View 1 (cartoon, rainbow, N blue to C red):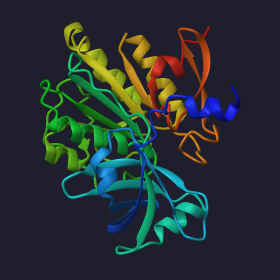
View 2 (cartoon, one colour; view 1 turned 180 degrees about the vertical axis):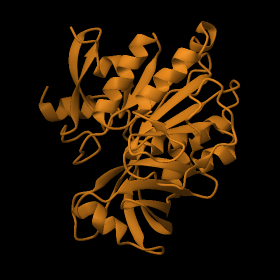
View 3 (cartoon, rainbow, N blue to C red; view 1 turned 180 degrees about the horizontal axis):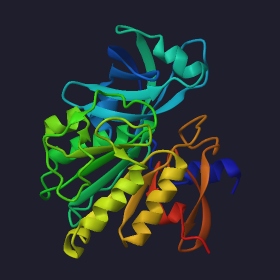
Length: 305
């Protein structure tokens, strides 16, 4: 059989037919501290099919051929919009930040396999670092409409630059949290989802230290029965994810991590975002864009030999 015939007879890839290309108007552009921006974009197809952990591949400007992958922070299927958070770090994101409400952006999405919720583990511990915060906001919002169990989420966020929101003391008690950690993300507080913040930058009300240290303090204060109901979900820089995987091993907890990798095509064609993943059959290279971005933590960050 020729290569062309083999390709034609091969089963369709799981992601084909699920990624939509849309031109979406910017409905709202919020400028935050530290060159961070939140865009609300009209994208009804993407909003309808997005799941926590999925992302969009967005054209920042007509003059720039390379798109940028951005995690979806919120998706409203009824109103047909999504929100993305990004920090200006280069030419592409600078061009994106220059667009005002009313401008039109081309995007592909939603892309990737997101987080998987397990009702038998209702204590969701969501850990986000820096621009890894968006998927966990989306996850928290999704829990509000998931009726399979009574979810008990806690969202912990860490950042060494100002958070992309105005933190304030939480109105929700978190009994096992350190007393000094009182700051929260106001949006989550309004939803009734407890959150706490961590930073080494000395921000008022934040736990002084890494977000994984805050998570460790909280987990250690739980009873064995409470810990048995916990599953960890994380997104952020690689060192934070590695520390989260180690934390999950320490407390013998399941953990899903959403990886951040540079992506050229974002649809599995170039394999430029491939990472080594440990499987039962041995090491394998997986594409973060369509095989992930969410993976089981220990498969990506196994215990050191």
